[in-house]
Image (tube, rainbow, N blue to C red; front, side, top):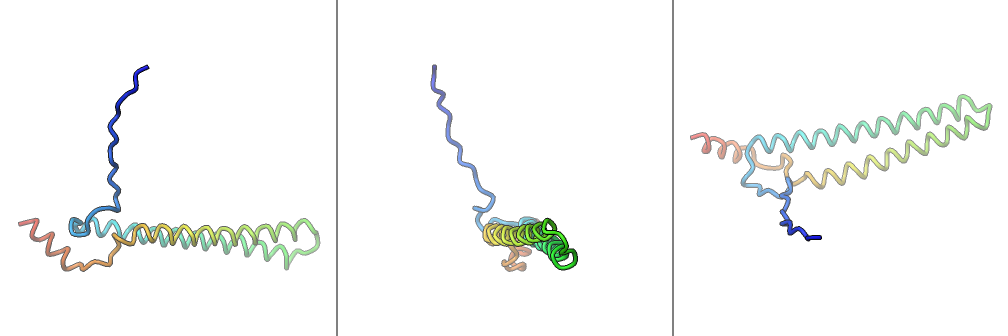
Length: 118
């Protein structure tokens, strides 16, 4: 068998671009990504609250059978787990995209875009 000599190609990460090379479209894309991250976090919170509310409802309103009380506590635990996972993922992704978010001076970006158009 022959060993193939494959060249190792370096994959350029999207997040390793120089800030000065970004154009306005790139900044807006980073802003959209940050907003999508926040929207996803709110969906996690909404799901966690729904699970916990159903769990509390089963425990407090229908406490006649042991099975429903146990199911209620399981749903509350799942809700807490969803909230923890959503929070961890939100902060991990936020840290990843923070370099490209809208912290930059928009005037510089607009000035650079105008210079490129000329």
